[in-house]
Length: 74
Image (cartoon, rainbow, N blue to C red):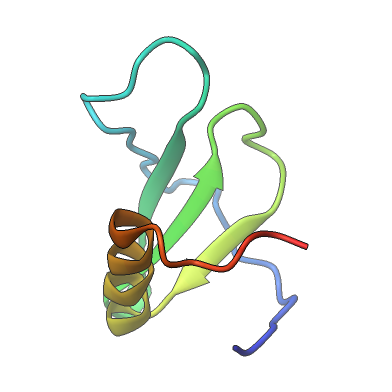
């Protein structure tokens, strides 16, 4: 895994949340980035850290979430 701490500009981006999200606050939001990239952030912390992916990486991330195969956070 590659770590990159460059800022991802979020100003002017349209952040969206799944219509399946409940009101419990345990949601993530996704925004489109240039060149088919995607950004993901915690809806409870809109000014906090953002994960940025290329399109292939975003699809791999979604697969990992869906299959619950992502390693736990350290």
